[in-house]
Length: 189
Image (cartoon, rainbow, N blue to C red; front, side, top):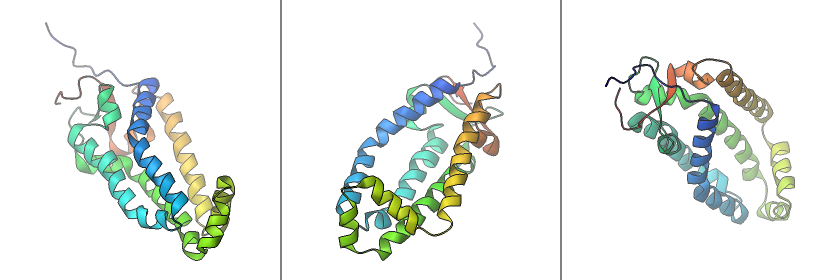
């Protein structure tokens, strides 16, 4: 019996499910970050480079090596080039680069005020987490707000593009020449 060579493109809901699985996998690290931020003023400053490395490992190296993040693989999704071949490191990096760059710029911008405020001032803000974030945003460099706005535009554009094309490719898929398909994650192209 022959199998169809036509790929089955992953739709919005299954991709959202994969994102939620990935969020659950990241939850322990997220809790460590929240704890570190509550305990140490400079935690975000010291954690920035390690978090970039972990982010690249998870969203680029795993995608390049296995064809998806753990969330995608658990839901039997695979990221491939549009010709069906494996994605490779370069395409995986290109696919994730806009989000990584915008996140890194935002995190760096919010780290700068942490370097200038005193431990006492930081501790005063902790019971009021929203006030703390507002204060950090107010003290952030002028490029923080445009970066955040660009990040939000990118996120919304991702969803709009994903929902408005037949192959359910997001903006980052068009950028890298990739597509997310259903199937056994261990299958090779």
